[in-house]
Length: 82
Image 1 (tube, rainbow, N blue to C red):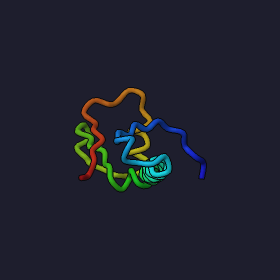
Image 2 (image 1 turned 30 degrees about the vertical axis):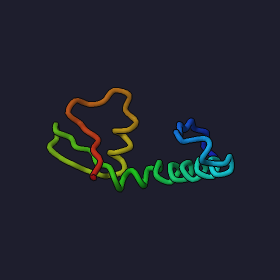
Image 3 (image 1 turned 180 degrees about the vertical axis):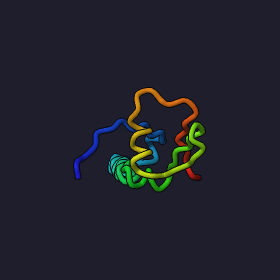
Image 4 (image 1 turned 90 degrees about the vertical axis):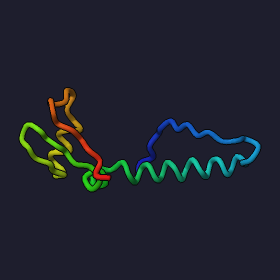
């Protein structure tokens, strides 16, 4: 899998952790983010509530279109199922 370059801001006390522990924690966080940033995962945990059409759906195609839009539609919301 391709490595993703990202900026992470992690606040911790320098004197409590060694450089190896910090690097290990950053790698774990990066791996976790890579897992949850996939469209399959987003389709499982998000849904589109379209008040114009009075429907709520978590279909992959509808979610992809909603995420890809530059200008959002009025009264269309991307909602986390939690």
